[in-house]
Length: 232
Ligand code: URA
Image (tube, rainbow, N blue to C red; front, top):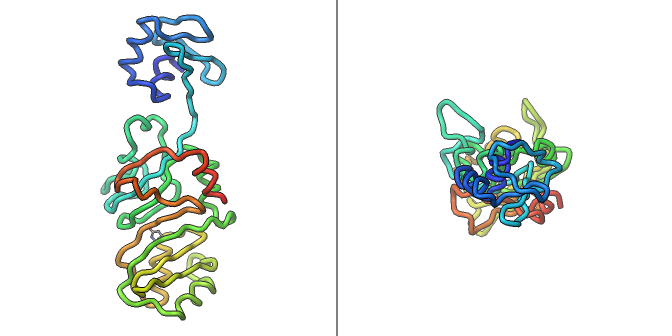
């Protein structure tokens, strides 16, 4: 990889500023100063420093996005805005994609990453990673609905595993936990018990909760502990 690209991609500074630093003799590779921005380096072996500071280059990125309504969970779309438009510019070069899907009118926790193995582990129903949603319904949820969710549900295209329904003091407001993420799953499970979802927000994936201080539309990297918490 080109030296200027490597440093810019690490998030140290924009490419133009990086070029200046290199020309100014501030950058060393394996201890020797290098003044050419297009010098080739091995990102897995070479030690790059700017003014003595070691540059760390991460191959993978894991972002938490507080998804607003009006965005589709895709990297591109002909009609609608894709969630990847909300990735801060300093992380754009990672080419992260949404890990699982939220409907265009669903809000809340969406992870974006470029790590395919990680994405698979989060999404696969085999791992039983529960996704927790807050939902507002057109009618009051009833105790019988809890049992219907617990029993799992047969749909023509898949069988929903046992799911959890918690009814709050206002019974039109509920929490729902599902272990898969099939197309419109929460909405379809609610329809099955005769209720329409009017508002839906994902608030948790495994042990990872949506950061309440993250404004709608904002994204930030997950900490190592947060990444682990998904699988706990
Ligand atoms: N279930 C739904 O119906 N919609 C979502 O966006 C997520 C889960």
